[in-house]
Amino acid sequence: MKVLVAYFSQTGKTKSVAEAIFESIDGEKELKKLDEVDSLEGYDLSFIGFPIIAFGPAKEGKEFLEQKAAGKKVALFITHAAPEDQEGVEAWLDKCREAASSAELVGFFHCQGELSEAIANALLKSDNPMMRSFGERRSETIGQPDETRLQRAREFAREVMDKL
Image (cartoon, rainbow, N blue to C red; front, side, top):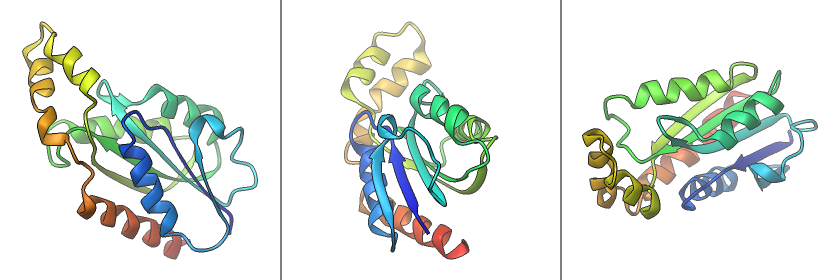
């Protein structure tokens, strides 16, 4: 089985999840940035990862899925700056699933990542109190995903591989 792990990362944290997934896969495999992937042809399974941006999938991830994933076996891995159980996260994740609706979705993983300093600073300048509160919580995201979350990503990869 030939497996691709492809990702888009702003802060390097989605990349760290991609690397954890990649190291857990045995056999023929490749690790690439999303913009380095021309096609999913020739891969039996593709793990595709990106962050949540503005309450939905990063544009790069959404466009990749819509343009290249139709009919392909895909497992998504998503990072976001919120704790996994925060209210609203599930709606954001549903938008990611929707972006992958033309693919055969065989697995889904998400975890907290790190909010970039630049985005936090922009949020802090917002007139919207909810946006400012997100920016104020940046310190809670630093260092995420931690080793526990990366271990969960490794387990996710093994479960998907075992299932197929």
